[in-house]
Length: 122
Length: 106
Image 1 (spheres, rainbow over the protein chains, first blue to last red):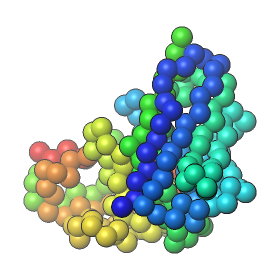
Image 2 (tube, one colour):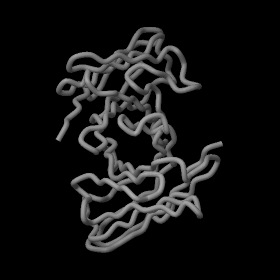
Image 3 (cartoon, chains in turn yellow, purple):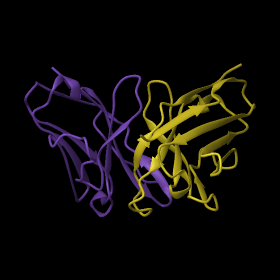
Image 4 (cartoon, each protein chain N blue to C red):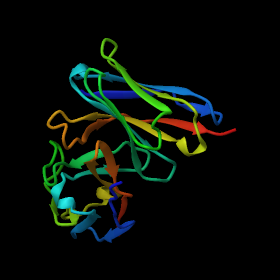
């Protein structure tokens, strides 16, 4: 059974940093591209970042570029999101999601974690 | 940046057909994916590549995509279908979601 379990969320002050983790199991993690998607309270889904299977290629939404870094440790079956210079507008539930292996040209997310809440407030 | 437009809400009686639209410039040239999200839960993929269904998703869920509009159709709507629905595409190396549509079953 595919499982994605996020952790690392919490309360952080504006300008602070936080690292999210996503532990994967039930599939060959090193074969799949992975994503982070966030959802502010009461709002819609917003794509954040993507990483390819070996970690050599990444992409980011403009709103987080230069502040967030996605990475992975295939030996530990874990995806990460390092978040720096956090702002109030980064407050959201952060989901990790697996990209379907069928096509990287038109990616979609076939499995999602349950999310971890990040609150940026003083 | 690419924009996807969804109606904020759609209401339908049980047993009827719900249609949720997703508008975008020449969206027919892209592959559209749809997710269902119930309160307090993670999203679930219900349609991918315009009209394909993942295993375990009822045949009542179907999709189409042409011109400037993609549509998720839910036939024989049930109370359990009440949820938020999001369309999604990939554009210029970025994921794009629609704003979401709340489906209310009357």
